[in-house]
Image (tube, rainbow, N blue to C red; front, side):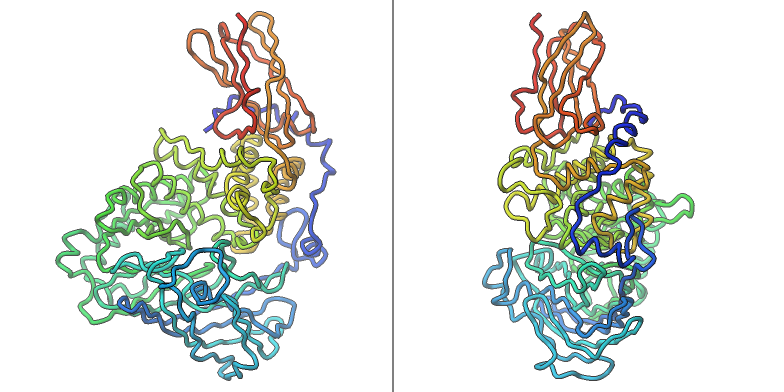
Length: 625
């Protein structure tokens, strides 16, 4: 990462931002109304009238690995905490991404197209409505007319359903091989109804990700007896499904810093891992999470370890790697995952890891879920580390924070990106991860380059990547640099404290960071997240009197980035002079960096790994001597 010499004196930062203290951020009418309604505040904290709905899910399913048929029931106790009377309920049928004729943005092979989710029955408070008159299924959305659900009222749904899991066309879920499956989005769920948009009517088309309420889940998964199951939440009936040896190993892993081989190659060969029944029913429970997923295999190995994530309470998190023995890179994934959880708990974001386990499953995607990760194997060590920590970092954003990924992908992917940049070198100090920086340079100022605040469903082309991943990640990195680790952590913790378990919108984040730091950062939020523009700095002049140098840096583009000057001396040594984005806080177009050289200077180069610069031809000054 960037070697920070010294931040500007904090008084200078405050004086610079004071001139812009009255600057306000542009805000859409529907978001502005949340302040009028009192559900949110301009300080970033939830308002006195903030609310969110919730549900209790009881899921019972059977899964046949041979036919890939998943069938079962889900009982939902849905609580309307909103001030509105609901006359319809929006459900999400995410497996309908694979339904014939459905609009999608991801390619699905003909062999994976199905008839979608079959709703065999649906009752509301034990009464069965006329499906033809009250229900409409459109892609992944199912709209159900209901008897009016008053504020504070609870309603119960019972749904019987079935669908066939995809064999190929693995989009976050599906068959991994003949004896391994990662199964996500497998049950009908109530969509989010919130204080911003009402019902989340955005269809799932395969590209944008998800938005779900914090709910309680209890799940019973019946599967052939030689399969093992890993899932969100706690396994509640280990004695019913595992051999006593395995139960003891799981307990040891949950109490030890060392890596425990819970399921080994020898165990797979001997076959005495699970109870010897034709089928076993695995019971899991998870509370206050936004989703529930599970994975299953009859031949995967399992390595696990744990660590104390909260020294105040001694609470531990177990970290798992569950994988095919053929994928040799996966033998070290448990170490990468454990180190990621450690860094997240103690360094960045320096918040005790919130869940009891994190399971990295050897799958065919690169996707995150509460307590679970579906990661493909990778041959390159650095790639494997960066993928592992990126996906695990999502635990905080979006899951602990309840972000609407469908609309604001940058509010979670940007954090996973800075997480990847910061955590990877902690695992392997040789890693320098420039993920996405070149893409920002290449697209800056082009027609396809739009502001980060553009809603995710509206993004096309390169912006679908840059606006979700590197651009917000760089924005977070620059603010961290400007404020310094201590103040940035204080501000970030204020945001987390106010909004974990809730649904923050972008302005809640901006306002919380302003409030938590005590610094008005609106000048930067506007320039980096709201405005178009190019990142382009230039060395416009260098003067010196002996060893005393003054380098004038011009902000050619409109977007502020840090000033990093690498001073190369004639003896081959180098020195980095660093100034944070605070040098641009008054809207100035130039800044002068004064420094005293240690010896004869050969050249000066502007920019480092995390400074995207669209024109680097004017970033080098060479001494005439």
